[in-house]
Image (cartoon, rainbow, N blue to C red; front, side, top):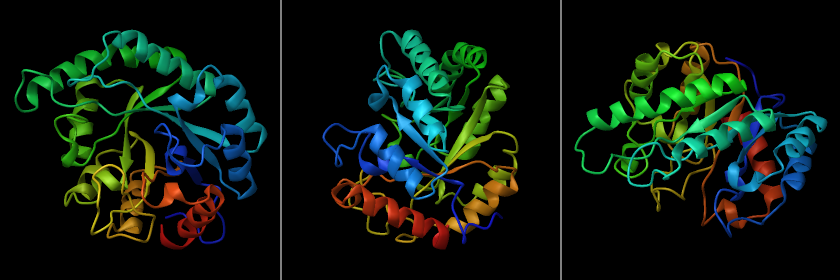
Length: 282
């Protein structure tokens, strides 16, 4: 495993940790202010959300690189399955891929969406997911972008995801066998899986992102009460050992949805705590 105790160039901020994924959440810092604050603390990269980029992808990407960091990724695609698939899915997927490329980010994260209306179980929804992913993979490859399927905790089944484990995500990767398609591993969503190490061992070459936070034993909200690393029950070092054992050497991206705690704090404090916990807990 890499040694992070003396520095954190592998540390990346997902701006959701400051509330930037939801309207009205967090302190409302501009992308420029976030970039400067991360650079001042020695972060190696940042992942943004589409809603905060708008038409400024090139300028924001250039600002990150000028500060000595990398744009690690972009969150996220529209849902591809379930009740909330946009009517113009192909156009929205293209726009998300093009924004990723304009930022100079290598990875666009996919949260699949839930069970397709009218279907039961997963088989039919997985068929539709693969069908809708295929042209997106081709488009991503043309743009120099890779797509990362992110499995979610089963509590999000039905409306947000149809992939619950790393093994599920790898099944879709195997079906398409496309070089632009891989997976993202988020501690919050996979820590509970007793077969996680076995699945990660099969994921060599396909892990495109690793997301850090913690699972609070007494979580108060399924979506918006993630823990800071070290405050919960996830075995962070064991998970990272398995991820790196599968060949992953990329950024470790801190992504904490925390409406009642961390989003209410000064962003500078949050960034300082993230850096300290990364060195000491991850």
